Image (tube, rainbow, N blue to C red; front, side, top):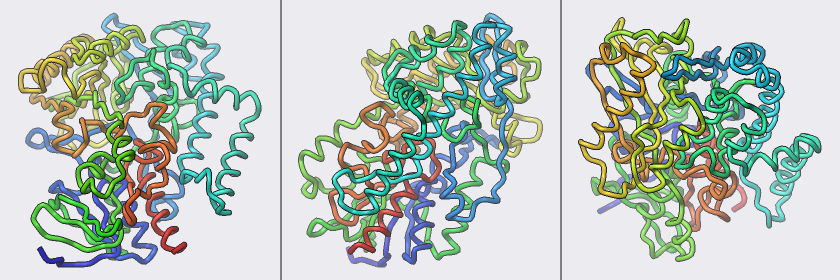
Length: 529
């Protein structure tokens, strides 16, 4: 097959990381092509029509946009909405706890359950905010080269060290203590109310196949606090006009700088000659030449699926095969004729626009995880619900609503078989039962239900093992050890090949973070050579 076109750089994937990387490269003077295997652009941020007239994004929890990306791409005018309720917890025993973005208001809500915990809440929330702020600094920096003699790399290391020292002796010690802890131990040290611990602790197991008693889950909690208002828990701002607004805005910047986008273009192979990238081959048979390929697909799909292994060192291949993906989150989408009342909530609109957890204790959360340890699906899963049409009414016909439930634990790898229609239906039924316990009239409002298992997420979004994280956020796969230790600076062992997806630093939940830093690394290396 002859090569039909030539570009300065090819970006694989048109999600947030891919569009940001393409725009950054184009602003630096490159001629860029973006290839997306799906028929529409947007990656995980695109809304899927799961029933006639009803649309839903894969995730309803907002991500954080690092300020340097917003400034660098001119996105500072894109409107956002700050939620008032950070996270709510409701139980089948008619118990309710609402944690607000205002820590004083959260303390008032907690006081009804535990005066002891209410007295401790504000100092605890401020402390978490300080620790998350340190991660926020790291997430805006490329991983330093520890053995580099470059003034720039040494300066970056010094900058990180200064930020760490600025925490002060007490907070430095607290950061080192907290990062490897289980979220159960972290919360047991401070609180007595099971409701308080469950409302906060669920953020420590988001999208990982670990329970609250597992080490490193405190890091996961802090990771998802980055960018949230001080004193809040899981309360990042969402885009006012819709879940697609960010990617659309970045695409507009990219197109202004002559970036070409192609949807429905699956990359079959990344072409290599003499240890250097020469371009890509599409599934259609077309070959396109470029000296740089920046992939936002996950590390396994990129380096094990698109590269001939003859070009990759065996030890590096071994490290790649040991990346833990372990998708364990399913998504159940409901089309509702109307929004049923939640009796325990005086006003359900604000909590349901954000996150409402249905798991009453960390013990129940750990029990939900127990089945996944042995390749089973929990019969009493951890369920979090959100109604995105309370933010964006256009996702459903007038007067109708969409409810999205995120369900753990539903492991990709099952001990006794694989995901089929019967297992998907059983998971959907278990989710519906969990919601009905706190919303008794829920089933009367349901028009249609769609279940996305980890197998479905893999097939629809190109996620290995259905892992939206592109690599589980555990202690050996965080920060500069993404995707594998020693290869955290986006450039891969093949000259011209870069990783810029969530499988690289800083990971999931940071809008365009890896794509932005990977594009900067491309430009930096070009200047050096």
